[in-house]
Image 1 (tube, rainbow, N blue to C red):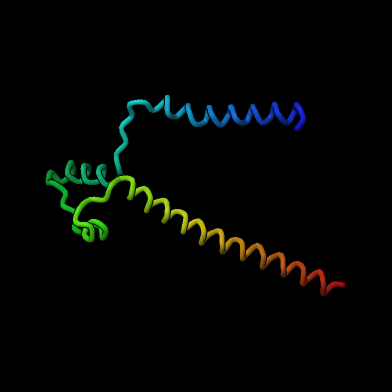
Image 2 (spheres, rainbow, N blue to C red):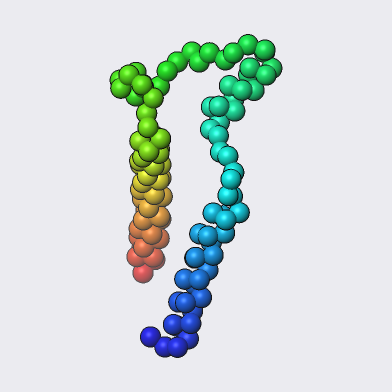
Length: 110
């Protein structure tokens, strides 16, 4: 590894540290709420009545209570990963199909 590569690596690592630390320091004391809470509060504000959900989550019915936040996050991440995998699979198929069509067209021309 040359000196130039080493300097670039150190600069990129410092940039990564800055990107991780800056939001943590900037958002100290911030409160985050879910969109479900904000929506039910807004409905109560507009109608003057307490919002009553018409359905309960399936997992809450199966487990007999609210899911822990960690489990909710895990399920959300798994759902996201599966969705990204499906999209990447089909995009890869389209790209590969285009390459094969281009190769066949070039082969016919010869």
